[in-house]
Image (cartoon, rainbow over the protein chains, first blue to last red):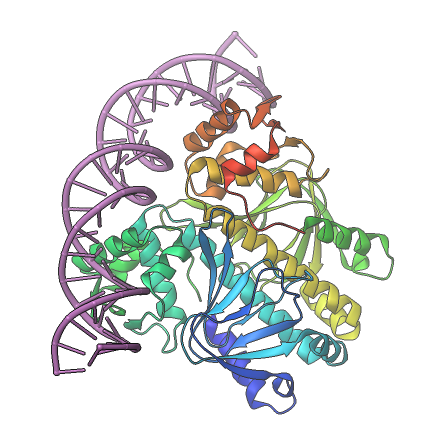
Length: 224
Length: 224
DNA sequence: CGTAGTCTTGAGTATCCTCAACGAGGGTGG
DNA sequence: CCACCCTCGTTGAGGATACTCAAGACTACG
């Protein structure tokens, strides 16, 4: 599914007539906020490299990550006037493209092609959120972490490769899966011991036995 | 947030020039499938009355409900050619409007107003999915069920009223919240005993102490 | 009135969260 | 260059929570 989005991203940025001229590209440092709670929703964004995350902060103080944003992913689109979520950069040097909403709306009204593009981007966003829901809907810790690894293997550049380099910390994974860091860690070592994966470094994971991993994860409706 | 969508729905169906002429309205019986796994994604839909649900069936056999679809909610929009999810009607007599995708796309290209509408609908869909993610991200059973009740109180017609008539079974709630029926039931009685809610029937719930309920739910970023 | 589906409650077990400690890696500053 | 600090990551022991299995009440419907 990301392949489509990546393609769209490539298309936009390779064609002279598309969204390219409206993009303001910034290189951001780790932890930098792209937009914060209550900020006016005046622009859309696209991750060009590395990683960003969108999260909600509960009154508890607990932080729930709603989406990991990879290269080619668009975000910040909303019907509201102000943001309810927070988006921040996870990796130093992550490049973000910013599209002023007004101008984009204007263009869209004039060019049906761009309209189709925007709709496709929104639908992709929906797909990703639904996938996240299915992952969070898993019961056990191993199932959650396992399906998370599979999702990342699919989404990360070099799609479905056996080697996965996780760009985020265990803490971020925990905030995404709604569990504790300790539980994430334990689930990963469980998966290692069961022979489904192996480590080549703390964040570099090799999927040794994909079908075993899918088995452990109670895997989901097939992506065609 | 649903208010917007409802308004859009009302707008569409009250104005002669909008999507109305393309809608084929059907009255469905409980359990009837609107579309199934692998069906070609050839149309968009809108719930006009009562309730439908969109769910994924895991290889386990376990069923995960991704969204409850209330009057005014659009669904079936996807970038794919075929559906990965299943949508079915929950209540006898639920009325569903069906919009052929092709025609809608054609109209959209011609009329920017309709394009804006479609985008707004997609964004609403994104909002609802994000809200679902935040609910599933809760830790304890009482938190999940509590925030579910609040969401329903907001979304159900008669918005934010103290009396909530749940249109779905405990089983459906369990499939939505990714927990067991027994646990849902226990959480509800816990909330009753704590004085946050009271029952006027198995499915009719009165929110006695809203702030207590929000407290129990570890409530979320405020809807403006 | 009987049956099927829904809903609740109980007892026991597995799982995950809480609290705590420790090791590894990456900067910084002496 | 090494000591130090900080974040990250892992592991352990104990307790709270939700799942498993089981049974019983309530409702709706034929």
